[in-house]
Image (cartoon, rainbow, N blue to C red; front, side, top):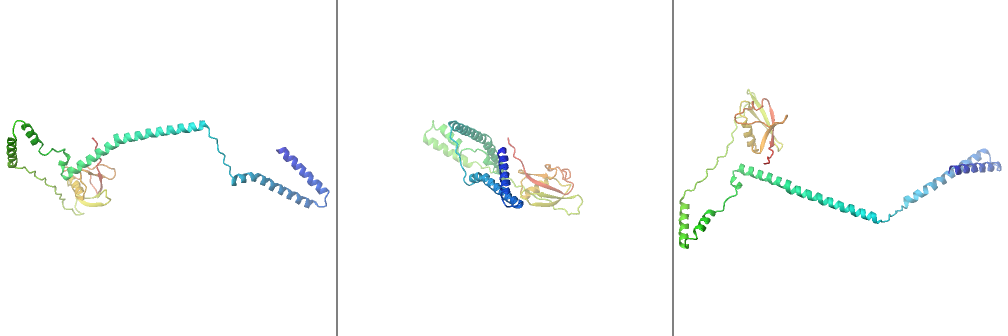
Length: 272
Protein backbone atom coordinates (compact mmCIF):
# COMPACT_ATOMS: atom_id res chain seq x y z
CA UNK A 1 0.00 0.00 0.00
CA UNK A 2 2.81 2.41 0.87
CA UNK A 3 4.62 1.62 -2.39
CA UNK A 4 1.52 2.44 -4.39
CA UNK A 5 1.15 5.77 -2.60
CA UNK A 6 4.77 6.66 -3.32
CA UNK A 7 4.43 5.78 -7.00
CA UNK A 8 1.20 7.75 -7.21
CA UNK A 9 2.77 10.82 -5.62
CA UNK A 10 5.80 10.63 -7.94
CA UNK A 11 3.60 10.38 -11.03
CA UNK A 12 1.41 13.23 -9.83
CA UNK A 13 4.51 15.38 -9.23
CA UNK A 14 5.89 14.57 -12.68
CA UNK A 15 2.56 15.35 -14.27
CA UNK A 16 2.39 18.70 -12.51
CA UNK A 17 6.00 19.53 -13.46
CA UNK A 18 5.51 18.65 -17.18
CA UNK A 19 2.25 20.59 -17.29
CA UNK A 20 3.97 23.59 -15.77
CA UNK A 21 6.89 23.45 -18.26
CA UNK A 22 4.66 23.23 -21.33
CA UNK A 23 2.12 25.76 -20.11
CA UNK A 24 2.07 29.52 -19.92
CA UNK A 25 1.09 29.74 -16.22
CA UNK A 26 3.54 30.93 -13.61
CA UNK A 27 4.83 29.33 -10.44
CA UNK A 28 2.14 30.84 -8.26
CA UNK A 29 -0.66 29.56 -10.46
CA UNK A 30 0.98 26.14 -10.61
CA UNK A 31 1.09 25.94 -6.81
CA UNK A 32 -2.55 26.93 -6.63
CA UNK A 33 -3.41 24.27 -9.17
CA UNK A 34 -1.46 21.63 -7.24
CA UNK A 35 -3.15 22.65 -3.96
CA UNK A 36 -6.57 22.35 -5.50
CA UNK A 37 -5.64 18.96 -6.84
CA UNK A 38 -4.54 17.77 -3.41
CA UNK A 39 -7.74 19.12 -1.88
CA UNK A 40 -9.84 17.36 -4.49
CA UNK A 41 -7.86 14.17 -3.93
CA UNK A 42 -8.41 14.41 -0.16
CA UNK A 43 -12.16 14.94 -0.59
CA UNK A 44 -12.39 11.91 -2.90
CA UNK A 45 -10.40 9.78 -0.45
CA UNK A 46 -12.66 10.83 2.45
CA UNK A 47 -15.80 10.04 0.42
CA UNK A 48 -14.45 6.62 -0.52
CA UNK A 49 -13.62 5.95 3.15
CA UNK A 50 -16.99 7.13 4.52
CA UNK A 51 -19.30 5.66 1.88
CA UNK A 52 -19.35 2.05 3.26
CA UNK A 53 -19.82 3.31 6.81
CA UNK A 54 -22.72 5.55 5.81
CA UNK A 55 -24.22 2.69 3.88
CA UNK A 56 -24.09 0.36 6.91
CA UNK A 57 -25.42 3.16 9.11
CA UNK A 58 -28.52 3.91 7.00
CA UNK A 59 -29.03 0.33 5.73
CA UNK A 60 -27.99 -2.08 8.50
CA UNK A 61 -27.63 -5.69 7.51
CA UNK A 62 -28.81 -8.31 10.01
CA UNK A 63 -27.14 -11.62 9.53
CA UNK A 64 -29.06 -14.54 10.94
CA UNK A 65 -26.96 -17.28 12.38
CA UNK A 66 -27.93 -20.76 11.28
CA UNK A 67 -29.63 -22.84 13.95
CA UNK A 68 -27.41 -25.77 14.71
CA UNK A 69 -28.68 -28.89 16.55
CA UNK A 70 -25.89 -28.53 19.10
CA UNK A 71 -27.00 -25.02 20.10
CA UNK A 72 -30.62 -26.14 20.38
CA UNK A 73 -29.70 -29.08 22.61
CA UNK A 74 -27.57 -26.83 24.87
CA UNK A 75 -30.42 -24.36 25.23
CA UNK A 76 -32.85 -27.13 26.14
CA UNK A 77 -30.45 -28.55 28.75
CA UNK A 78 -29.92 -25.13 30.31
CA UNK A 79 -33.66 -24.51 30.46
CA UNK A 80 -34.26 -27.92 32.06
CA UNK A 81 -31.55 -27.35 34.70
CA UNK A 82 -33.02 -23.90 35.44
CA UNK A 83 -36.47 -25.40 35.98
CA UNK A 84 -35.10 -28.09 38.32
CA UNK A 85 -33.22 -25.50 40.38
CA UNK A 86 -36.30 -23.29 40.58
CA UNK A 87 -38.45 -26.21 41.79
CA UNK A 88 -35.87 -27.14 44.43
CA UNK A 89 -35.73 -23.54 45.65
CA UNK A 90 -39.54 -23.36 45.85
CA UNK A 91 -39.68 -26.64 47.80
CA UNK A 92 -37.07 -25.42 50.30
CA UNK A 93 -38.95 -22.14 50.74
CA UNK A 94 -42.29 -23.86 51.35
CA UNK A 95 -40.73 -26.34 53.81
CA UNK A 96 -39.09 -23.54 55.78
CA UNK A 97 -42.35 -21.60 55.86
CA UNK A 98 -44.35 -24.59 57.09
CA UNK A 99 -41.81 -25.85 59.64
CA UNK A 100 -40.39 -22.60 61.04
CA UNK A 101 -42.25 -19.41 60.16
CA UNK A 102 -45.85 -20.55 60.66
CA UNK A 103 -45.25 -22.28 64.04
CA UNK A 104 -43.36 -19.24 65.26
CA UNK A 105 -46.19 -16.92 64.25
CA UNK A 106 -48.80 -19.18 65.84
CA UNK A 107 -46.80 -19.36 69.07
CA UNK A 108 -46.43 -15.59 69.19
CA UNK A 109 -50.15 -15.13 68.54
CA UNK A 110 -51.07 -17.57 71.32
CA UNK A 111 -48.78 -15.79 73.78
CA UNK A 112 -50.30 -12.42 72.93
CA UNK A 113 -53.84 -13.81 73.31
CA UNK A 114 -52.92 -15.35 76.65
CA UNK A 115 -51.48 -12.07 77.94
CA UNK A 116 -54.54 -10.20 76.68
CA UNK A 117 -56.97 -12.59 78.44
CA UNK A 118 -54.95 -12.40 81.65
CA UNK A 119 -55.02 -8.60 81.53
CA UNK A 120 -58.76 -8.46 80.91
CA UNK A 121 -59.52 -11.15 83.54
CA UNK A 122 -60.97 -13.61 81.02
CA UNK A 123 -58.70 -16.50 81.98
CA UNK A 124 -61.56 -18.96 81.50
CA UNK A 125 -61.03 -18.61 77.76
CA UNK A 126 -57.58 -20.19 78.12
CA UNK A 127 -58.99 -23.55 79.36
CA UNK A 128 -60.32 -26.27 77.07
CA UNK A 129 -63.66 -26.44 78.95
CA UNK A 130 -65.95 -29.37 79.74
CA UNK A 131 -69.22 -30.46 78.08
CA UNK A 132 -72.33 -29.41 79.98
CA UNK A 133 -73.90 -32.39 81.73
CA UNK A 134 -71.21 -34.78 80.56
CA UNK A 135 -70.75 -36.57 83.89
CA UNK A 136 -74.51 -36.69 84.51
CA UNK A 137 -75.17 -38.29 81.13
CA UNK A 138 -72.42 -40.80 81.78
CA UNK A 139 -73.94 -41.80 85.14
CA UNK A 140 -77.37 -42.12 83.58
CA UNK A 141 -75.94 -44.28 80.85
CA UNK A 142 -74.19 -46.56 83.37
CA UNK A 143 -77.29 -47.01 85.52
CA UNK A 144 -79.70 -47.34 82.61
CA UNK A 145 -78.93 -50.99 82.05
CA UNK A 146 -80.40 -52.19 85.39
CA UNK A 147 -83.47 -49.94 85.77
CA UNK A 148 -86.71 -49.35 83.94
CA UNK A 149 -87.68 -45.98 82.43
CA UNK A 150 -89.76 -44.96 85.48
CA UNK A 151 -86.90 -45.53 87.87
CA UNK A 152 -84.52 -43.68 85.63
CA UNK A 153 -86.88 -40.69 85.43
CA UNK A 154 -87.35 -40.71 89.23
CA UNK A 155 -83.61 -40.82 89.80
CA UNK A 156 -82.95 -37.96 87.38
CA UNK A 157 -85.71 -35.89 89.06
CA UNK A 158 -84.13 -36.38 92.49
CA UNK A 159 -80.72 -35.53 91.09
CA UNK A 160 -82.11 -32.34 89.60
CA UNK A 161 -83.69 -31.35 92.95
CA UNK A 162 -80.42 -31.88 94.82
CA UNK A 163 -78.59 -29.82 92.25
CA UNK A 164 -81.07 -26.94 92.53
CA UNK A 165 -81.04 -27.03 96.33
CA UNK A 166 -77.28 -26.77 96.65
CA UNK A 167 -76.12 -23.23 97.18
CA UNK A 168 -74.41 -21.73 94.21
CA UNK A 169 -70.98 -20.48 95.07
CA UNK A 170 -70.45 -17.23 93.33
CA UNK A 171 -66.97 -16.11 92.60
CA UNK A 172 -65.99 -12.97 94.36
CA UNK A 173 -65.06 -10.47 91.67
CA UNK A 174 -61.54 -9.27 91.92
CA UNK A 175 -61.22 -5.69 92.85
CA UNK A 176 -59.48 -3.65 90.25
CA UNK A 177 -56.37 -1.88 91.37
CA UNK A 178 -56.99 1.84 91.69
CA UNK A 179 -53.83 3.76 90.91
CA UNK A 180 -53.37 6.80 93.12
CA UNK A 181 -50.19 8.79 92.69
CA UNK A 182 -48.97 11.10 95.45
CA UNK A 183 -49.22 14.82 94.96
CA UNK A 184 -46.53 16.27 92.76
CA UNK A 185 -43.94 18.17 94.86
CA UNK A 186 -42.94 21.69 94.01
CA UNK A 187 -39.83 22.41 91.99
CA UNK A 188 -37.93 23.98 94.92
CA UNK A 189 -38.41 21.00 97.25
CA UNK A 190 -35.22 19.31 98.39
CA UNK A 191 -34.54 15.95 96.73
CA UNK A 192 -36.99 16.50 93.86
CA UNK A 193 -36.23 15.18 90.35
CA UNK A 194 -38.10 15.72 87.11
CA UNK A 195 -38.77 12.56 85.07
CA UNK A 196 -40.01 12.49 81.48
CA UNK A 197 -41.65 9.47 79.86
CA UNK A 198 -41.13 9.10 76.12
CA UNK A 199 -44.03 6.97 74.89
CA UNK A 200 -44.03 4.76 71.76
CA UNK A 201 -46.75 7.00 70.28
CA UNK A 202 -44.29 9.90 70.19
CA UNK A 203 -45.65 12.05 73.00
CA UNK A 204 -43.64 12.95 76.09
CA UNK A 205 -45.11 13.53 79.57
CA UNK A 206 -43.25 14.98 82.56
CA UNK A 207 -43.78 14.79 86.32
CA UNK A 208 -41.79 15.56 89.47
CA UNK A 209 -40.93 12.91 92.07
CA UNK A 210 -38.90 12.72 95.25
CA UNK A 211 -35.80 10.56 95.31
CA UNK A 212 -37.00 8.80 98.45
CA UNK A 213 -40.23 7.60 96.84
CA UNK A 214 -40.61 4.01 95.68
CA UNK A 215 -39.67 3.22 92.11
CA UNK A 216 -42.95 1.27 91.83
CA UNK A 217 -44.61 4.66 91.35
CA UNK A 218 -42.98 4.88 87.92
CA UNK A 219 -44.71 1.67 86.82
CA UNK A 220 -48.00 2.93 88.25
CA UNK A 221 -47.53 6.19 86.39
CA UNK A 222 -46.78 4.29 83.16
CA UNK A 223 -49.87 2.10 83.65
CA UNK A 224 -52.02 5.14 84.32
CA UNK A 225 -50.73 6.63 81.09
CA UNK A 226 -52.00 3.58 79.18
CA UNK A 227 -49.03 1.19 79.03
CA UNK A 228 -49.40 -1.95 81.17
CA UNK A 229 -46.21 -3.17 82.91
CA UNK A 230 -46.91 -6.70 81.68
CA UNK A 231 -46.34 -5.58 78.10
CA UNK A 232 -44.07 -2.56 78.47
CA UNK A 233 -40.98 -1.66 80.48
CA UNK A 234 -38.98 1.45 81.31
CA UNK A 235 -35.46 1.94 79.92
CA UNK A 236 -32.91 4.70 80.27
CA UNK A 237 -31.85 6.57 77.14
CA UNK A 238 -28.06 6.30 77.22
CA UNK A 239 -26.68 3.87 78.06
CA UNK A 240 -29.77 1.76 77.43
CA UNK A 241 -30.58 -0.26 80.55
CA UNK A 242 -33.82 -1.63 81.91
CA UNK A 243 -34.90 0.28 85.02
CA UNK A 244 -35.14 -1.84 88.18
CA UNK A 245 -38.53 -0.71 89.49
CA UNK A 246 -39.73 -2.50 92.61
CA UNK A 247 -41.79 -1.60 95.65
CA UNK A 248 -38.87 -1.77 98.10
CA UNK A 249 -36.43 0.14 95.85
CA UNK A 250 -36.37 3.93 95.95
CA UNK A 251 -35.71 6.15 92.97
CA UNK A 252 -32.23 6.99 94.24
CA UNK A 253 -31.40 3.30 94.65
CA UNK A 254 -32.69 2.64 91.14
CA UNK A 255 -30.15 5.16 89.79
CA UNK A 256 -32.35 8.24 89.30
CA UNK A 257 -30.46 11.06 90.97
CA UNK A 258 -31.05 13.91 88.51
CA UNK A 259 -33.59 14.87 85.89
CA UNK A 260 -34.03 11.81 83.68
CA UNK A 261 -35.75 10.81 80.43
CA UNK A 262 -37.14 7.25 80.39
CA UNK A 263 -38.29 5.39 77.28
CA UNK A 264 -41.41 3.22 77.33
CA UNK A 265 -40.48 0.13 75.27
CA UNK A 266 -42.38 -3.03 74.46
CA UNK A 267 -41.11 -6.18 76.11
CA UNK A 268 -39.66 -8.82 73.86
CA UNK A 269 -41.74 -12.02 73.67
CA UNK A 270 -40.22 -15.13 75.19
CA UNK A 271 -40.43 -18.36 73.19
CA UNK A 272 -40.56 -21.53 75.22
